[in-house]
Amino acid sequence: MTQAPGTRRDIPDATVARLPVYLRALRALTAAGIDVVSSEDLAQAAGVRSTGLRKDLSHLGSYGVRGVGYDVARLSDEIARELGLQHDWAVAIVGMGNLGHALAAYSGFATRGFKVRWLVDEDPEVIGTVIAGLTVIGFDELAMVAGDGLIAVIATPPTAAQDVADQMTRMGVRSILNFAPCVLQVPEGVEVRKVDLATELQILAFHEQRGRDEDDDAARLGVHAARVAEAAR
Ligand SMILES: NC(=O)c1ccc[n+]([C@@H]2O[C@H](COP(=O)([O-])OP(=O)(O)OC[C@H]3O[C@@H](n4cnc5c(N)ncnc54)[C@H](O)[C@@H]3O)[C@@H](O)[C@H]2O)c1
Image (cartoon, rainbow, N blue to C red; front, side, top):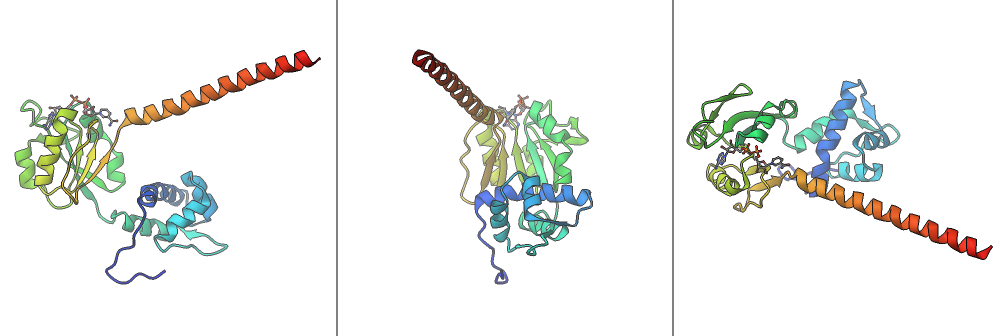
């Protein structure tokens, strides 16, 4: 597929959400010394169906070579470029409590192209402390140093999250990852992603409960069938 210079392909959100998963699988293949991978094997490594994987990758203009597969290094580069991971993104974590500490200490951001550069809090007792090698700063200082393309991670209580989002967008931040359990109102053009472990657990609980209900139904049906068979004897 060819693309006119300067234009961007429209890639469905669901495909974009799977690209990091493909990239992780491809990097694991690279680490294992594998240069070429079939769509079936890549799909299995990524935990998706191969038809879905081929469709996703076709949005990038990557079709692989029939009977051979995908060039692992080339496909990794294409996905990384599409995700904007050709350079490190600066990240500011706001709210240096329990969660903020854990996120600041997480080494996985750096290996995936995100550099935690700023730790921010409003508490004067927290500002100036050193966490994971970085000194915590206040919003005033962040406003002076924050550059373009900064990604903000909100790890404050929900009551403070909207105010933090407002301050961030006034500084020109257009990407926010929100851990606080609340809905944020942001100006058009600002992207908010939400992480909510409690919601994920609730979804698991729903499926767990449904599985149990089905087991109970099956057990009841089994007892009923046994009684019918007994009566028929
Ligand atoms: N998304 C998830 O899965 C998940 C998991 C755990 C916690 N959380 C949420 O993360 C948030 C933080 O949890 P925690 O346990 O770390 O809380 P915490 O009370 O330990 O820390 C909150 C920090 O935010 C700071 N803060 C408060 N208002 C602020 C403001 N306006 N500007 C800057 N900093 C401010 C406080 O000074 C404190 O350091 C909560 O909203 C919690 O519900 C989400």
